[in-house]
Length: 153
Image (cartoon, rainbow, N blue to C red; front, side, top):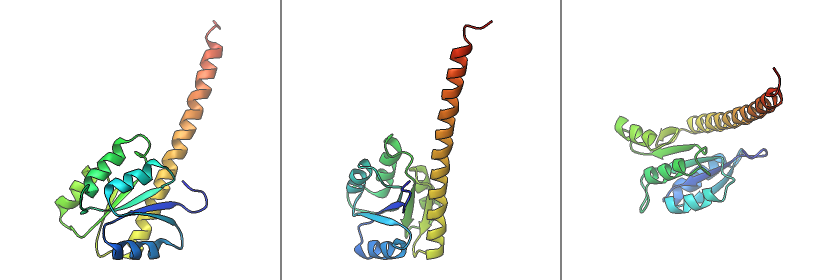
């Protein structure tokens, strides 16, 4: 995660939605923008994105397909995706989560809800990365210790 200000990729085909989200997030976060799923994947492949806010319904590659591809790519699999959608039925949310999203926010967006969920998922990602790093350190230490003790009785 960017130490200064995390970067959030906003993916939406509606310019007004992009402008609203960017305005809400500008105080605490850097933002990047994509107007479709394919462009979002290109931006993500370049690295430097800490979280994705994605519309579900977009022409071409929809949010579900883009989310599945993000989750399947080892370079981007740990980047959390939060869906933003006017689709509010339980099956819509279930489909979004099944596609790999970590959260689903129904429009119209409540700014306090958006801020809380973004902060939560950024913190969870940072904690998972820290845990993986510490685990790797412990495994390396254990391997050295076991390697040095192999010849002893």
